[in-house]
Length: 158
Image 1 (cartoon, rainbow, N blue to C red):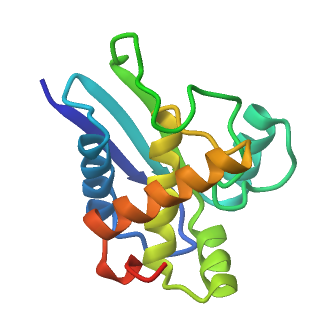
Image 2 (cartoon, one colour):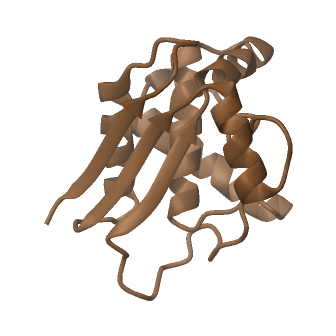
């Protein structure tokens, strides 16, 4: 069985290295122990679409600021998933315009910010969370590890 990642760029606000981002999701899933029979959709959308999703699923106005808002819960960082992995893990949705603003604010490259948001969203699908400070620290550390290993050595000092 395979891990299928379906990518779609449905916006025009910024260039997206779609193939590289799809490969990154596959790498993260593999590093996190997902071995097959799983599907993930990776979508890049504009601000109005992101705001609509944010309101619909999180009850908050405006575009998700880089997908960094806590999700509705989960098993927490690093805890094993006891039940069999579902076939459809879910969707990772990123707004490149928000990513560009985050990148400028944080002084990082646009592609690196996109990669961070993709890894962040993928970890959420696997049950990672950051509602508590300890969870946030663990999740951020894992994001950095995954980005160093599967994206760019530029994450070494972060």
